[in-house]
Image (tube, rainbow, N blue to C red):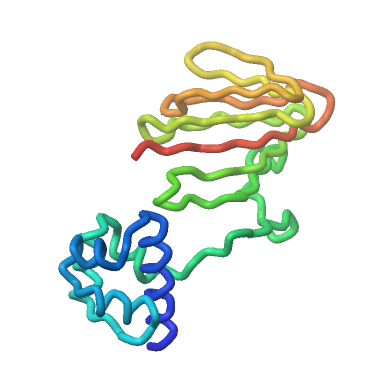
Length: 184
């Protein structure tokens, strides 16, 4: 129980400071006394669920923002720790580097496509935008009956809520980064 109280204390303090609010202002917005807010922030008081809901509603944040474990400021994602998803008999490999988080609305991948590799992708959720940068090789890309040839250093963004096709027409491996941005 003590660990969750420390997490709540840190989260409230961080949120209050990020919104540049004084203890007095938080008390005014939430209906929770300045003394109680201070005690919670110092980890001296275990807030009730009702108190946490008052704080969340007053600060216009999600309840889970108060109880969520803090994420480190820096995360290293080692390629060797990622199990790729395979298509086209292993010629098309997708490595999830940055999983989707509700608060950020995007996810990031590294993709490798061997010579001749191909993927016919289904439509994503309406309004989803895809952003691609090719780092090695070349990518033949088709969406909306338009075909694009991208080479190393080229980028493309498009609405991915329609079928689209990736193909490596070159003689070497194609490496690219892909970000999917989801509408709110």
